[in-house]
Amino acid sequence: MTTPQPPVPVFRPGLFDGQLALVTGGGTGIGFGVAQLLAELGATVVLASRNQAHLDPAVEQLRSVGRKAASLVLDVRDADGVKAAVRSVADTHGRIDVLVNNAAGNFYVPSESMSANAWRSVLEIDLSGTFFCSQAVMPVMRDRGGGRIVNISMTLHYRGWPLMAHATAAKAGIDALTRTLALEWARHGIRVNAVAPGPIPTEGVKKAFAALPGQPHDVFSAERAMDDYARRAIPLARMGSPRDIANMVAFLASPAGDWITGAIMVVDGGEWLQKSPN
Ligand code: NAP
Image 1 (cartoon, helix red, strand yellow):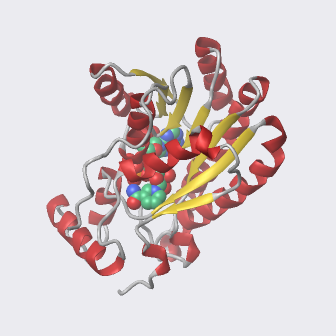
Image 2 (tube, protein in one colour):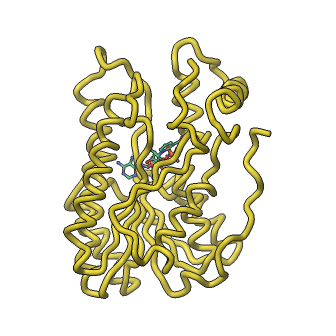
């Protein structure tokens, strides 16, 4: 009951033929799920993150089934590095049609003991990284008459979420940035939207959860605890999957998203509407 259904094809084959999509954090978790779907639909995908060891297997997996994929080592906190990397992607491929700002830091820590470094690090990856990447692709998209930027947000800041002061603050900033950039760049044909996922048990999330005091410390028990949470706290009674999020990203990046900008699309099985039963 709590397992996501296997992916069902929703979009027309070749929907993104000839397009270039840059996905930050595209080597793992939700980012990889997004890259997989866009590549399946014909896009060339560039997966960008800090760690080549995260990127190589992801690119290999995509290429092994005939998709067009490349990696880009990039720290989204480094504004100059981001500009240079985006320039190199635009020079190589001649275009950037879709940017998915998905890279994020992810760990739980009580606010009273959060180091300045931890605070800055998450704000810089999530919020500044989203801004730097958006700013860097803007001229490329503008010069080609438009593009789609999709930011990956969350819902935890709608109510507040203990131990996540850094991430909730950063994602609230991303929501504000989404709306502001949407207004500033609409005249260039650049649509800027966000997707706010509910809980998706990626490896990153499982590790962060297993590191919480009082939680099961092995991944298998963490999965059982998450299943139990899904049954209690999510009206649609299952955790999400990267494909759930990828479908919404693909929708926003497709012609169906032509008249949508500044929107934050919640994809969470109804979780945030329902008060936490804890
Ligand atoms: P994940 O697998 O841990 O992915 C995070 C990615 O970000 C990694 O690929 C990582 O790659 C990259 N990254 C981290 N710091 C970076 C930096 N400085 N520069 C470039 N890339 C960097 O996490 P996930 O669960 O898939 O989450 C993906 C997105 O969904 C995040 O924005 C997260 O906040 C959001 N989200 C997730 C959930 C969930 O339940 N999973 C819920 C709501 C929102 P490297 O280590 O190689 O840099």
